[in-house]
Length: 336
Ligand SMILES: *Cc1c(COP(=O)(O)O)cnc(C)c1O
Figure (cartoon, rainbow, N blue to C red):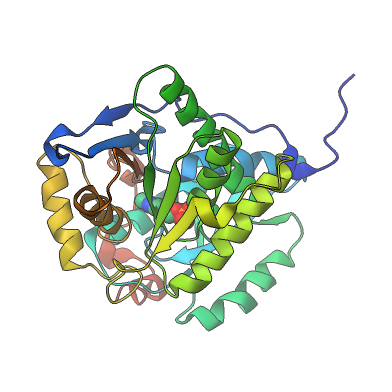
């Protein structure tokens, strides 16, 4: 006889990603003293990859265990998290709703919101961040709702990256890559960096995590990320690890703010493209710029850049999607 889990945050995860994701050296972007490597979480799924897949495996399991029927989340209009929640939430039988805020218009952001609508995402546009909480609360009051926090960075979501750190540790142990001194990853809501820092500590690896902030204020993001890493450790029964020594937030690549492209990001995007790696302006261009600079500046042997952007084709997801001109007016107004 099986008993229902007492704590729904411990529900066994659903599985819809493909693991382990490969690791690969980037010799042409390394130098004599420091090797740069990449962890391909762009390839967590051929339907839609990136870093939201591992998080949603845990979050959707928790929502199912709670008996929820409708996911309520929030994000910028072109959010990867909102799109991933729409795709996988619908696949597992949930209705999916998102309160959306403005961001600078890019073709990438437009494609994301079009694809979300094509998956049956229900959108609630608001013009300012201050407008988000009342709208979210009103959707949560309707029975059957389950809150998925921004970026999927709940404890359950971050536990997906504790697991990812275990996956990396077995790749290190089997000799697929040297033990990284630094793991560099984009940090938007912090769950990825938090889970990795906790998981690497649990594995006893010496790797430190550098979260490259794409969301101001970086100090607040850092505090939230460290707290979440501690909660992951506590959930795993090992609360005594020294999180501050394991996890730092780098605020120097943010530029004018969330979703605003930077020159360093554009340069990094060009250098990445030369070795076949695709980056986006909001997250991965800034993180990769930091990783490239660290290759020159950090006196360490091995740096692992953790790639978080889906590289799955958007074409199947855009089938039947409204054209940009046909987007609801409230949505078009969010594309600044
Ligand atoms: C969401 C996202 C991130 C940030 O992950 P967090 O866990 O929110 O910090 C990084 N890169 C990409 C491409 C993302 O979509």
